[in-house]
Length: 247
Ligand SMILES: C[S@@+](CC[C@H](N)C(=O)[O-])C[C@H]1O[C@@H](n2cnc3c(N)ncnc32)[C@H](O)[C@@H]1O
Image 1 (cartoon, rainbow, N blue to C red):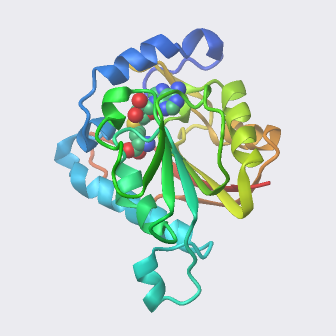
Image 2: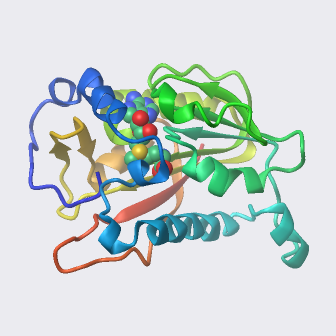
């Protein structure tokens, strides 16, 4: 999921290409661990390191909005925590456990997760700080709570543009005052959308994302590239962008 794709199907109808069944069958075949979640990045590039770099990049991004962990707020006055957070397409909870739970205000705070593959979420159920686990795709999720932060990373390529607009509208409808929606995704180098046959997903270009956000009635209040991912001569990771969105 993280390589530059040689399968450019620009112009192919998305609905025909993004097959939910095929996408889910692909993820069912993937191991339920962090390595599986970042499986597109070969271990030679230092997978563990990549996850750590990713989480630190996200932490730094959130700090720019004054959102930070309880422990950090002792040394950095002004950081605030969240009452309730939701992670979309959470996989095995790499981000929920590695970042989002540390942002909770207190013991009552919860991180809810949405993830269609039950074997991925099995170990997350009942863990400290984890709230409701929605075993379903983002396109099926109906919100029940209000959120200070909605984090969705490396999974929206499984939704058509239309489904993604509707998902974002639902997120917006339950966003707390001063809440934030973050989309962190691979984006294409050349700017047009590319389809990946292996998992039936789309990697979008910058313009497509901007159009989707606009249709959902969201403003991009900050956009940054993730820095510091390993690159080798044989493996080039796609640029990963973090978009902070508000109504
Ligand atoms: C590359 S993994 C990323 C997992 C997690 N976001 C992370 O960064 O560790 C992609 C995840 O998207 C999930 N996924 C596939 N189709 C989805 C859909 N329609 N809605 C939500 N998640 C989906 C997969 O099951 C998988 O857990």
